Image (cartoon, rainbow, N blue to C red):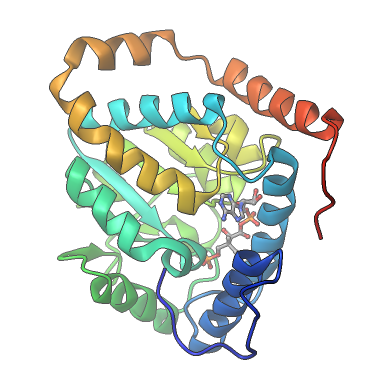
Amino acid sequence: MNTSPLFVQISKDHPRYRSLVVREMMAKRVEEGIVAPTGLIAHGRGEAFDYLLGERTTENARRAEMVAVAMLLDAIRPVISVNGNTAALCSKEVVGLAEATRAKIEVNLFHRTEERVQKVCSFMEDAGAKEVLGRSPDALLPGIASDRARCTREGIYSADVVLVPLEDGDRAEALVKFGKKVIAIDLNPLSRTARAAHVTIVDEVTRAVPNMTTMVPELRRNGDRRLALLNSFDNQLNLEGAMEAMRANLSAPQSEGKE
Ligand code: PTJ
């Protein structure tokens, strides 16, 4: 996570220290024009679902992460689509995953302005990305009315597998209709994105992306394992597993309250 001075000082003893620091960082990124103002609302929704999940990577999510890595490694033209929230939360980690899986990075924004596209692209480059697509879109994804349809021929338009962290539903559905294999990272198992994607990782993006990078070396060596993972995966069952994990967490006796 990129850090810069925060608006307020937060005591490390605070039980929700990490969450508060991330919120402050996100507010800063809004000021800088990386995160869209409504990105804070999306972040809050994510926090709520993560709370239900127990703020941990479940076994269910870990399996989806492995399947997603297998899919990225077997892809011919994998692309990781980056928006403002993803860049703010885990730019370096996304660069690490892209390098490990030889995926391209393309910035694609829901609240698109030329200025924001430039800023998010530069932010990713500052995090170490050698090439970031998206500054000069030259293709339109069919089936989307918004500016989000604008993408690059070299990247999302011709990709076979697209990883979409923290997505809004329209584009995930359009990508699937256009023949892409879609991997979503979304803490809300009920979202349209989660339901439209071929593989949905119900995990917090800052946990999911590094987890995936650590899985690459073993899965790269083992083609049989990749095939077995891909053949045995059912996203509907995966989403039901995520909801079951939330239900179980809600009924578990809590030793201490959270804030
Ligand atoms: O930067 P832009 O302009 O492209 O805009 C990005 C946002 C995120 C604002 C835009 O795509 C949007 O409005 O998304 P939604 O429709 O709010 O969907 C975001 C989804 O991501 C929701 O289902 C959230 O639960 C989920 N989410 C939020 N934070 C996280 C998350 N999932 C994983 N990790 C998170 N940290």
